[in-house]
Length: 400
Ligand SMILES: [Zn+2]
Image (cartoon, rainbow, N blue to C red):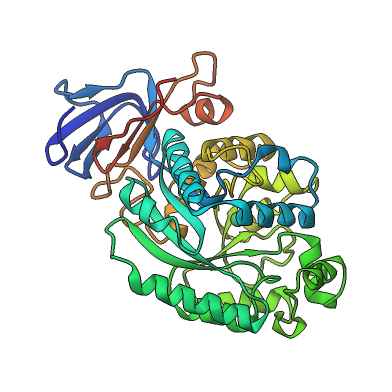
């Protein structure tokens, strides 16, 4: 394997650049960390012939919670939403700082194994920053803000400011902020997050309980919050629509889930859909087709392992392919590449095999019994990632 900094040319049966049509027997030219060309095979002087594989940009998991990678799988079964939050709280309280770092590392390793090169990680206390900054993964660490009561919100705000102050700038990792959800942050804390002018993600309209809470200020969600001693009705935003309008003030705002949103005409927004987590909580359909018709930009995420079996974002794309046959395979792959990079604010250098972008590539074997179309072969198959290159260097990925 040549060292980064040198020039090399890879060839593969299928090269899927994302910003153009798939190339049968294509090649990618790389110099150092960057792509210098993508074309049909026109030279026999190839450094690495990857053979019968589908080569595409490294994948983007636009929304996850690495710190929940150690969540006990048996706690997930049969949960309603409030029981589920209880189990997440119990897990967080019972996790030691050493275990937390182990879980984050495990999440990083799982992500790389799945062909992921960029990640949007919602991080309690911003604790994933150090391990992520030592890994090859790029992306955004969104510091999670929680506090419906003003006292708690003030603490969260101070912790965030301390975190930002201590961060060492990183070439491939950016800080972001995540006001958690309309039921868990007061409007002052939400506005504080928006005013940071950083990449921002917020869970919005995830459950009917949340919609009911904002509408009536009562109901089982309010009772649950009161029982936890974290309720302050005056901290709640007046409506979900008001939350969306506040978020619109930061052009880097990205919504997560949006399951119970029903008006998509107001503005073309950006949203991360987590298909398997959606199915974990809901039997009803996600409004994905309506969002796409309205021109929303959609990326996919795995969410955390408290609601999902693994951190394999291609499995999310495969579920979208299975559930929504009218959505084109090309658009589905954009959701885990260029659109993911765009929602993280990192698409100038990532998300497609384009000249000048980082040489982030992943390859998958071709399913010999699958579709002749490489996109369908990937989305309808179940093959695992064979290799991942990040910024010009192959990573150690699974050999099992
Ligand atoms: Zn989430």
